Length: 222
Image 1 (spheres, rainbow, N blue to C red):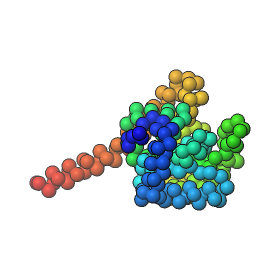
Image 2 (image 1 turned 30 degrees about the horizontal axis):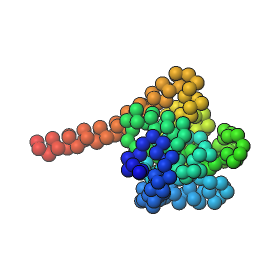
Image 3 (image 1 turned 180 degrees about the vertical axis):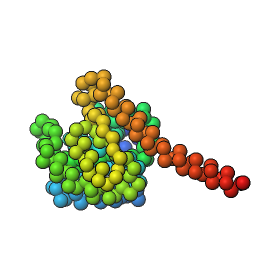
Image 4 (image 1 turned 90 degrees about the vertical axis):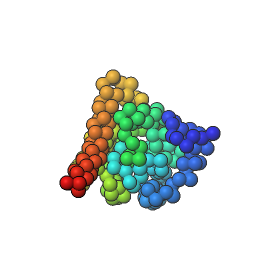
């Protein structure tokens, strides 16, 4: 039986995939779903959807990966719950950092699939990334509460000038693929440090809001 609480690699369960697909009409994710479907028609390739259990258009933090892997086609989602090593690592690192799931949305700098069935997987080329960047502004327009972006991997770092132009602070971390994470103990340390910093930045506005409320209450009593 599929759990209502998402767990590591929970999208390997077809029942959970079906349940998740039944949530894509939610107000917080519907604009991103429409965007992805329109983009898929324009580029002529599958575009996995943002996970409806994440923050969707209400997210304050964007996690920008590189490109969907072939196994995402089985679930149809860009999700930390996908049955892949990359997703599992991201799930663990985000849990460790204590970043609330509803504060985040996960996307790819090249959001459509570039993998060819039956062929070895390939990394996005410069042309792929340049093409993806042309479509990223329209996606960012759908995130009115965005306060922070974390780019994962060198390809995703190409979005930093655009984020700076839009005055969205950004942090960079290594890609959470097992290929990279297992390269050196320094890689998981850098990912953990980056997400810990992201968690601090997300918490800062909430702390400021609480202090403002406290000051207002104190002034009203005086």
